[in-house]
Every structure is written in structure tokens, then in C-alpha cells.
Image (tube, rainbow, N blue to C red; front, side, top):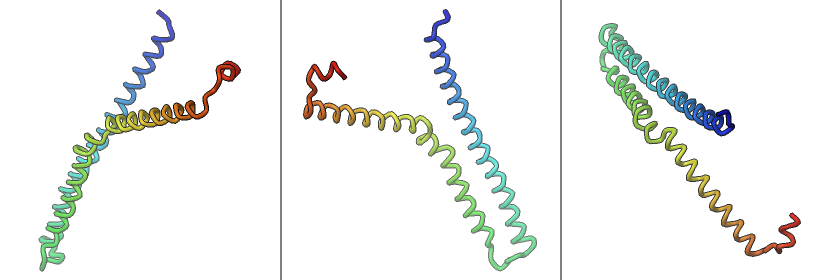
Length: 130
């Protein structure tokens, strides 16, 4: 009932839940920033149009079109970063890559250890004294 194994399992579950909560919070922050960026884009676009057309600042040329186009491109990159890239290159991808690298390192270490044991075999007497 009060074994140490259960407390270890509970700690692991708590760590997993904590990681999930942190991941969810970071995703919420990313999405909120994207929505703020979109709202600023809308207000900024209207502001550029007003400056160009109503206040007649540089009215010989419709420069607001280039400003809005550039800003829309930056917003598109932000959108791709939040909804596309983070899904494919998110926490799960990082975990998989880390596990692959650890497995490769363990295999290399085991291989090197076998090579060392082949080249320099230890006698039974030396193994027992160490």
C-alpha cells in the first residue's frame, strides 16, 4: 500500500502531466501572439490606407499596397510557424530525435567496448580483483 514503487509511478505521472501542461501553455501563447499579430495587421492596414488616401501622404503612388503585402507575408510566415512547423517539429519530434541520438551513442559505446575487450582481454584473476 505504501511502497516506494507507487510513489515513483506517481512522480513520473506528475512529470508527464507537468510537461503536457507546459506544452499546452506554450501553444496557447503562440496562438495568442498570432491573433494579436492579426489584429495589429488589420488596424495597421486601415491606418496605412487612411494615411495614404485620406491624409494624402504620398498620394501620387499607392504605397500602402506594398506595406500591406509585406506585412501579410510576414503574418503568413508567423501563421506557418505556429500551425505547421510546430506540429511537425514540436516536442514529440524533439523527443524522437533525442531518443535516436541516445540509441546511436549507446550502440557506439557498446561497439567500442567490445573492440577494447577483444584487443585487451582481461584474465579472470584480474576481473575478480577489480
